[in-house]
Image (cartoon, rainbow, N blue to C red; front, side, top):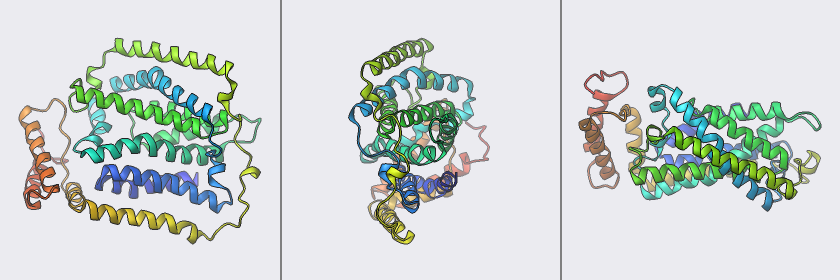
Length: 366
């Protein structure tokens, strides 16, 4: 619990700040230095070999492939209908407030690639190390006691960390799946693969819908037909049942079956001083922040100014004139970031729109 509380405090402070400065950089920074780094340091301080404790070693090929296929089938058969119902029940203002697709707006091609890499690679690896390898395992009682209390608690905490009430149930179900795979196989890799599969399919569908024009500004929820959802559910559950049947014929997909005992993962060498454990992580984090400032100093300055002068997101049914006005401001921001236009030009326009459409302002003109 201490690890979760500490991680949450860092997540809503350091993690939030880095993601405000640059979303693509912030995702990688949060995953690597907060989730992975914190878990690694705490396990080393406790005298464990981190990779062995969380189930990263050895790598298991068949269980990992099974986990990936299970993640795809679960997304289609379970996550899609749960999220569809949540979107239907949640009020419009709540959906707008927690619209994750806005994270992809205004990103350069390189930043978009980094974001997709963070979602598809960094998040599955680092979050599974923390939430399953460290947090869930620390709560799991020795066999033959039931692990379900640990599974439920870790899945709820995992979902709560995403700070998204609309997607809470879907992510809690995912947490149960990833945690069950870790407990059932004794390896973290099947859960990492299932996590990656879920994020890859979700991101791919979002990009396809946005690029093809099926969704306006990435809003796929308004055009999703319930019959399409039912069709996906049938396909997903057919795949889930097929995977269940296959696992009976190929028991190797379950790996060793249990996580290694604490004695098996104890470090054989003396535990380094805490300062020496912390030093490489702090040094790497500091250098990465310095690098961000050197590579994208203007972008960081713009992000800081945006935070100081917030503008409420426009609803998807906003008047065309207001949408054009907001688009022009984004284009001006891009030009300033490239050094084509002085910073003052954007600051003036941002200030004007903040005064008109900022939090607490009169929005009847919309």
